[in-house]
Image 1: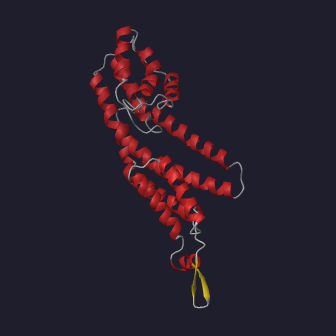
Image 2 (image 1 turned 45 degrees about the vertical axis):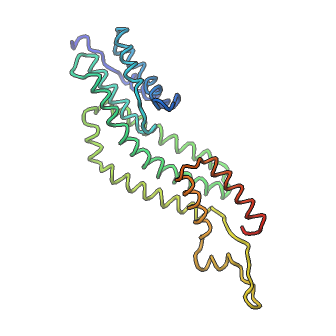
Image 3 (image 1 turned 135 degrees about the vertical axis):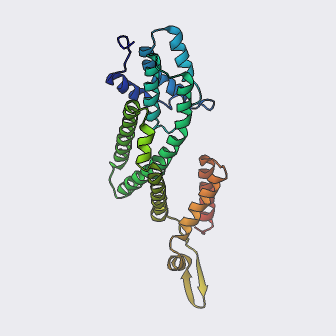
Length: 269
């Protein structure tokens, strides 16, 4: 069996990495990222299985439901490629094993990706680049795109490569890094950044004035002395509340426009 053993090369893994970045290219609400996953696995399957029927079975098992974070799901691609290789070479790996490992890993990896990348990294980079843009640096959007994609592709490549090389021990290695602690820290940091952005760049103020005796008092000055940035906080919490109740982002944007024009017309904001 060793003489006829089929082994995936570095070139095959690199190709798997490139195609794995299209995992959301055919997203649908029935099987989520299944088509993208199957697309990435096609070259691997074609190399490992020479029999047409075996290829068809492999295609079909990777068309099942799949949904994870698009940045770190490369771990699953690497592990599954390793398991397919072992099964193709007659080792004790079954279709159920492959399906089970996909189902077991896609949820935890989605949580890690959402916390680290969506909840912390991307808001931090966006905040820094927004600050640069407001300071007059026209290259700020390009910096954002470059930084985000360098980290994205770097993480994805590392995950695919190590997922394949350390398929049996990868999750144990991740646990030794205290990933849960890093996830919690990243979530807290992301919340601080988002809060800072709302307080710094959300310009909500009121021109209302009132008279006390012969003195005229500006309401905004009073608010600044008592509770600075109160109105931006109220606006932020209002938008958050609407989104949490299930309103779409488009609905919320139109609501902001209507409320803003109305309150501005009457001189309240």
